[in-house]
Image (cartoon, rainbow, N blue to C red):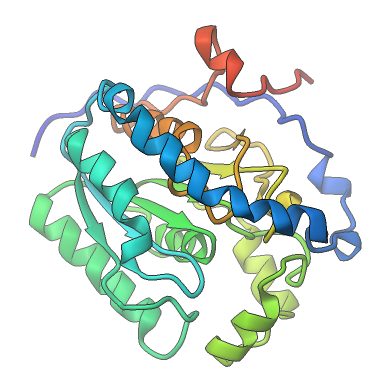
Amino acid sequence: MPATRSPRAPRRPSSPAVPDTAHTDWHDLRAPNAWLLMLEGRAPWEYAALLASLPWMKKLPHGDGHPVLVFPGLGANDLTTAPLRALLESLGYATQPWGQGFNFGPRAGVLEQAKADLQALHRRHHRKVSLIGWSLGGIYARELAKECPELARCVVTLGTPFTGHPRATNAWRFFEMVSGHTSNDADLMAQIRTAPPVPTTSIYSKSDGVVAWRCSVNEPSPLAENIEVQASHIGLGVNPIALYALADRLAQPDGDWQPFEPKGARRWFYKAPERP
C-alpha cells in the first residue's frame, strides 16, 4: 500500500454564489420549468464537445491508480457512464461500473450490493475508493461514504438532488413508479441532506432541466464544496467542463484535499465563488 502524505488542514471553501441554504424554504422550490426541460436537448452536443476535446482532456493530470466506483442516474445503466469511465481509465484510474443494470431506485438488495461492491473494491486494491454518482446515483455515493467513511476517499456528484424539496425535480413521478418508494419522505431527506464526512463535491448546473439546481448545493463546510458548470442534466456526465472539474478533484493526493479554485484559464469556464 503506497504511503500517503500527512493530512493537511483544508482551506475552508468560500460560500458559493447561491442563496444561503440555511434560510431557504425548501417547500418553495419547484421543478425546472418547461424551457429548461427543453434545453435538455443539448446533451448530444455536449457529447460531441467531449469527443472533440478528448486530445486535450487526456492531457489532464494523471491519477495515482486508485479505484473509482461510478453510479448511473435514475432509469440509466452503465452504458451512460461509459464515456466518463473511459476518460478516467485513460488518466490512470481503476474504474468500476455499478453493475446492477438499470437504476430504478433503492429496491430490495440494491444498496446492500453497492456496499458489498465498495468493500470488495477496497480489498482488491488496498486503497480507498472514490465514489462518483450522476443524479440519483450520487445519493448512493453519498450514503455509502457516510456508512463506510473508512473506505471512501472522496465523493463527487453530478446534478444530484440531495437537498431541497423531494419533488423539486421533473423525475419524481418516474422515481415513484419504478422504485415503489415515495419521493416525499421528510425524515429520509433530512438524512440525505447531510454531507458525508469525506471530501465531497457537487457539480451542478443552473440550467439543469430535470433537477432544481438548489437541490444540488452543499452547505459550505471544510470538506464540502459546489462547482457550477453550464450543462444539461442529461449531458452532465459527458460535458467536458464538468468532467474536467471531476478529474481535477480525483487527482488530489489522498489526505490533502483542497477546494476547487477557478484561477487562471479556469475563470473562463467556472464562476468564482462569492467571498463572505
